[in-house]
Amino acid sequence: NLIGETRQPSDLFLCTSDDGIEWDENECQVLYTQFHDPVVVKKDNTYYLFAKLLTEGVYYGSSTDGLTWPAQEQLVRLTFYDEEGEDTSKNLDDVSAFTAPDGEIWIASNTAQEEGGPSKAIGIFRPKEM
Image 1 (cartoon, rainbow, N blue to C red):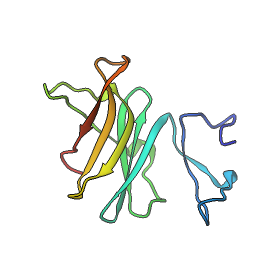
Image 2: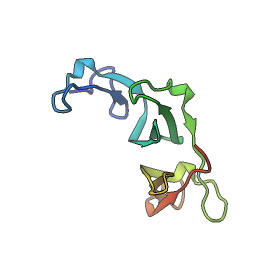
Image 3: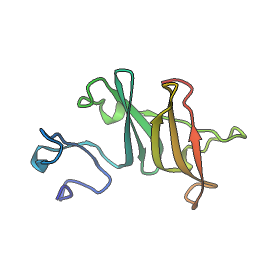
Image 4: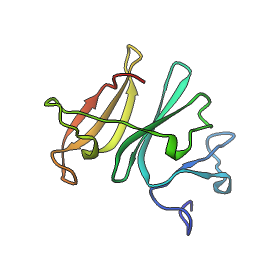
């Protein structure tokens, strides 16, 4: 059980395994706290991790080996705009990301019409630059 006195349900862990089947939870370390819905995609030779900080929005960090990640305070907060130019960054949940056939990273997410409201649609976003 990875959740204990010092581990919370919304913490992201870094765990490794020799075979991808057997995992030793004692070897896992908390990578980021208060994040959920993580997704990692690879573009060229870089891994990008996207995750939602519980009340603040979507953040990302990058790694060249998939094991060494920036400190939590070095993660970059992404800003998302709707078609009217309104900042909808705090209204996103269930973040997902994928690499499009042209190699660009796109992000998909449930979107609420207002902060804290129920999800009303799935938004697909293309970052201006990575």
